[in-house]
Amino acid sequence: MATRDFTANVISASKVEPSGPYQNSTASGVWDLSEQFDLRKGGNWPETGVSLQRALFGPRNSSPRTAVDQVDISTLGNGTDFGGVTTHDNGGGVGFGSDTRCIFTGGAGNSNIIQFATFSTSGDFADFGDLTVGRINPAGFASNTRGCTAGGQAGAASDVIEYVTIASAGNATDFGDLDDGFENIGGGFASSAGRGIIAGGYHSGSPKNKIQYVTISSTGNSTDFGDLTVARQYVGGLASATRGVTFGGEISNGSTSDVMDYITIGSTGNATDFGDLTAATKNTAGAASATRGIRAGGTKANGSGSVNTIDYITIGSTGNAQDFGDLSSSSNNDNIAGAASSTPSSQP
Image (cartoon, rainbow, N blue to C red; front, side, top):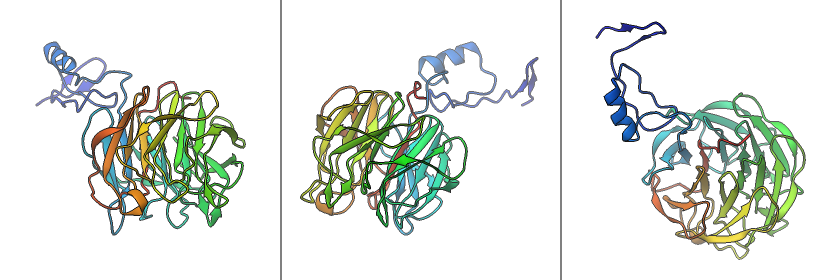
């Protein structure tokens, strides 16, 4: 079919059906007003300001463990294949993201690899740069412009915090230090107030209940925030613009926890009970939209294998988690990283 000349451009008469009500979706071609009206009424016409609510979880699968799942946070359902990470790292890394870009850092073998993908485009991750210190099981958190990796195990427990500018590939830069070396963390998240939170971890021979925070837009050492309701390591974390939720983990007697608790990120103070996961889980990953949080994968109680389940919560309320769906693989879903594209629009 021939193209039609317009004053501003030349556009095709072949229509591209929009894939969903997302800001980055397309509806190119020549549409008449009635067709556009029908799509808009059905919620399938791209609207400015409505962002893609995609979460990525990985690496999972086996031999090698490279696969990454994608999940639409706004619906319920199972994960589907997104692509793969740049290297087989057996998990143990951490994820964070901006509105458009997902970053995974660290991993097994004290990896220093930083890799990235674009949330809206399925495909393999690409090399971003290197951490200043390779480590496994750190915490990760981000504003819409800057992402941080904190603590973890780098031969010994690390106190290092470092950052990258998410839109620009390159090596990480020193940010500051935690108040001591914390390993086996996992629990990290950020808010629109520009704070990054580090929750729990392992220090001096036992899991800890300590919560620390930094101001992401600056650099400097962490400050004490308060305490978790239960001391634990290998914790998951997620946040809305104002509230952060931690979940699961391993508690002091070696057993696995189903605890969820929350804090108001813009203030300081101890965490409050939120509810329970559908099952006790550690080494699990979290991601969130502005209103909904999801937990994916992890290790079963007492380390008896991994789970492929996904739970969800409404972050602004309290209550027990509910079933969301499953990851696409039934095995090797422990120690996965998670990140979401739906960073609150007020986030700096």
